[in-house]
Figure 1: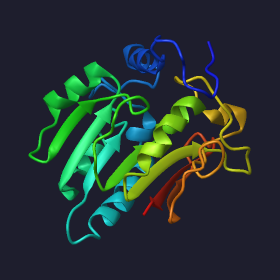
Figure 2 (figure 1 turned 30 degrees about the horizontal axis):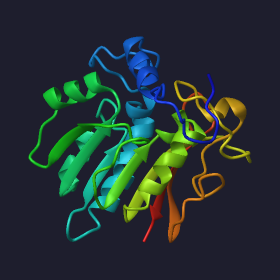
Figure 3 (figure 1 turned 90 degrees about the horizontal axis):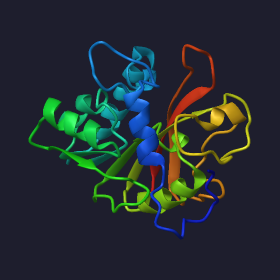
Figure 4 (figure 1 turned 90 degrees about the vertical axis):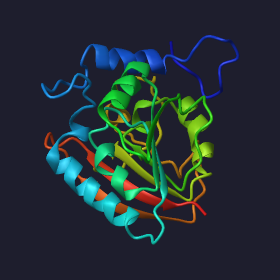
Length: 225
């Protein structure tokens, strides 16, 4: 059942939690013998991960006082665990309860905490910088419209999205779940309608083409206020 662009008026839960649980249960993003939860090549392929980590570390270490970082959609935490040391506090969030429970068991640091939240529906923790890495691309416009206003409370937002490598119509709607807008020759642009995210400026940090040659994975640093 497709969502329209307005919030549901009934009390039925949105399907995103169930969809994401199924993705991990059925290994729809692939498998790795080293982990029981696998967040896909975007979280493990070195050609994608290493440049991302270098760019984000460079940003985080540019401040005299470390930032409070909120990782919105932390997944299996293969990437987040390599950034914790560069934050005053690192708050890692995901919608899948079993994944968060597993992360709590496997990763620990004095400045690290995990929360199981639906970032579209729940109140987000305060912080200085939000990391949103290949998360919005999986969500319906309806859910993204709930998330984008919340991003305005962070001074910095580092957003990563898989988009077409040619001109495209942004923000075509999808049903939340495994697929992304690339199959519709579309991708997320939070500055464009219907999201209209207001920022002071945006700087592209990275643009990497995956090995399969489909689209480009772009990381942008937005300064919000």
